[in-house]
Image (tube, rainbow, N blue to C red):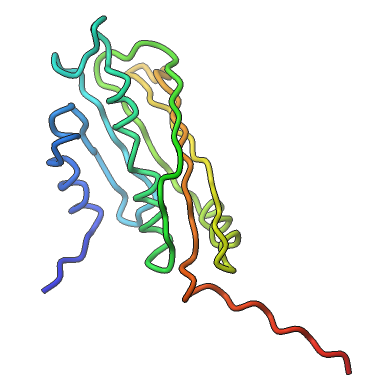
Length: 164
């Protein structure tokens, strides 16, 4: 019997995944409709940098898979979704528990479906702020996704109309 991957099951798997587990990254929630996720990075002695604040690699890692995962599941099996590029801007030192919230809205999904309807690839940038307990931005993360409708499921080109 095949187990269906639900948001709750994925959350539990990610929380046990060694790169998250051992770096203090905790997936607090993934919405049942795959439209949002909330992730925390808890400060631990082993995940701080030389000057005692959050290691920048962990700030990026806590945000890394979520735009791809949410988009992939929201669009469904007819689409190929990959991470294409990423960037991070460190705004201020991160201390304590920091948080990132991802929200995938209907307008973005409609844009992705429209741009890929014929089987063409589409590159889309998503942005996420990592904030501290006071709500102040610690880092800004940008992720670019490659999205393409699978060729066998893409809309066929319209037949040319013959003049009468």
